[in-house]
Amino acid sequence: RSTLFPYTTLFRSGNTENAANILACRLRDKGIKTTMFDVSVAGTSEVVAASFQYSHLVFAAPTYNGGIFIKMDEVLRDIEAHSLKNRTVAFMENGTRAANGGKKMKEIFAGLKGMNLIEDTVTIKSALADGQEAQVEKLAEAIAETM
Image (cartoon, rainbow, N blue to C red; front, side, top):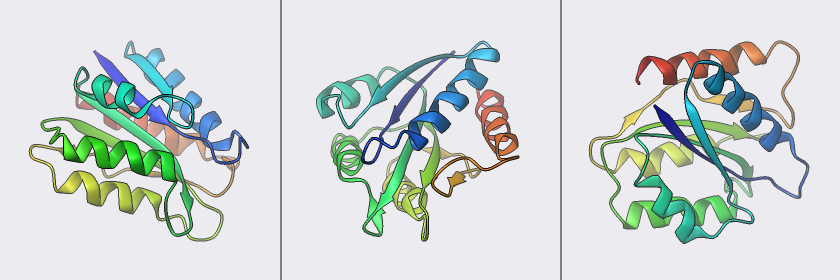
């Protein structure tokens, strides 16, 4: 039972990374091993290769210019080009005004075969708000239920 967890930070604010770490801790508390990559510094090929080794993937990224942060988009497009299939995928998005990175990430994976997309996307408005850890726990539960 393990999950690959690529995430990225925008301008090193750390809020997406913080939320990703909280989710990873919740998964580990449930006995699920997690491997995390910061795609803003990790090589795309390293993350893509790792995605073929895990049954579950979680992508966390900020919205950037109405889309997905550039480095995460590069990773996702490479995964798409390699026709990854038969995975369970969850998402966390971060955006102050129009957080739509999760929607755009889901669109990429919707075109791949055998993907189980978890609907409970966690949306962060810059940083996790008070009480929002319940949403993170709900996502962790949804992931654990599919293992």
